[in-house]
Amino acid sequence: MKRLPIVPTLVVLLAVAAMIALGLWQLQRRAEKAVLIARATANLDQPARPLPRRITDELLFARVTADCARVVDWTMGAGRTAKGVSGYRHIATCLSARGQRFQVDMGVASDPKLRPAWAGGAVAGTLSHAPGGPTLLDRMSGHAPPPAPMIVSDTAAPGLAPSRRPDPASLPDNHMAYAIQWFAFALAAVIIYLLALRRRSR
Image 1 (tube, rainbow, N blue to C red):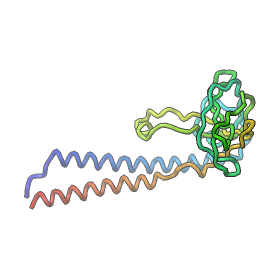
Image 2 (spheres, rainbow, N blue to C red):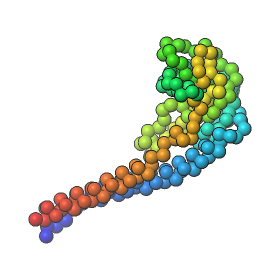
Image 3 (tube, one colour):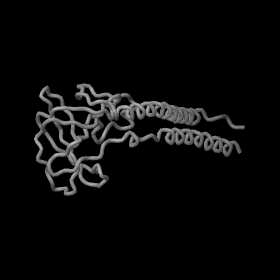
Image 4 (cartoon, rainbow, N blue to C red):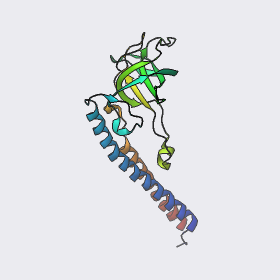
């Protein structure tokens, strides 16, 4: 029987430990996501409240009001109307009178060349997150910036159709699948290494 190679064994053990840790982290995230979805569902029927300066996940899908004193930018992306028709979603970046920066989904157009004629004003809608967000590495390292708040307006800008109201059911809940995947990778690594050791001993 040949001596067990120290360096390769340590490398495999460290890799397996890392994959198991990632699997356990996904299970923890799944429990957190279940709480978030339950809270978001409860927020749907709560009375509207002014948009707070500090946005947390506890307010996700809550009804909010805000005042857009000035539109500083527009962005466009894929979206759907309240009736489920696909189109181009127009998102305004607003500044409040107190300097708070937030985004407002002002509706969907079928024509990609349309430019909304909306310069700001009172907004009422459902609080959501703006498109984009931190990467998986950012979340794992604990350096993920807070997601940008976005209000999906109940009333569309002139020429646009109201966007579909955010639904908590749309929140991804695939953490169990990811956990199983990481555990399977760890098991596969152990099996492959044991087979390699067995072949080496022969």
